[in-house]
Amino acid sequence: MIDYQQFFDIQYWFTLNPGFLSIPATIGFAVFFGLCISASLGLTLMARKRKIASNPADKVVLAKTNTLLISMGIIGYCLLFFSYQAIPIFSMRFLYLVWGLGFAIWAYVIWHYAATEVPRIKDEREKKRQLEKYTLKK
Picture 1 (tube, rainbow, N blue to C red):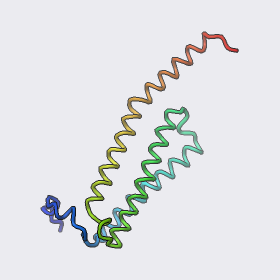
Picture 2 (cartoon, one colour):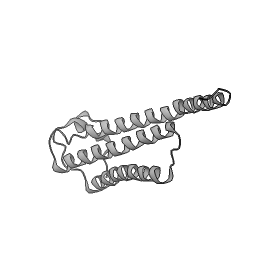
Picture 3 (cartoon, rainbow, N blue to C red):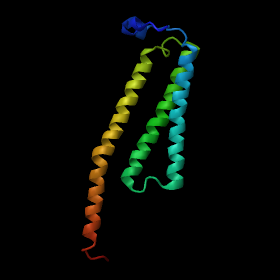
């Protein structure tokens, strides 16, 4: 049974010796971090094989997504290792909150770039392509 009251206690998040993670939590974190790394490697392989990112703007979004997934997966495994070994400062529960907040902010920045900048870049490329029809070439 989970005591949800402890989540609102500041001492729960900032204690220097939080103890060990439970077995289901450890397995859950390990699977999630492994999925991040696997998704990054899968996207890289698909991009190389199938050319899923045909234009430069999509390639930038794909590269940013790959960097997010591989970085957060490795950092997550480091946090999990520190928690498993019960290293005092590095196994603080607060670090998982920082990791999650960093993941969310980074994902939002990538999404925002893909939703605002990529269409603008595609429009500029299309206008340039249309203009090249009517200009002289060397």
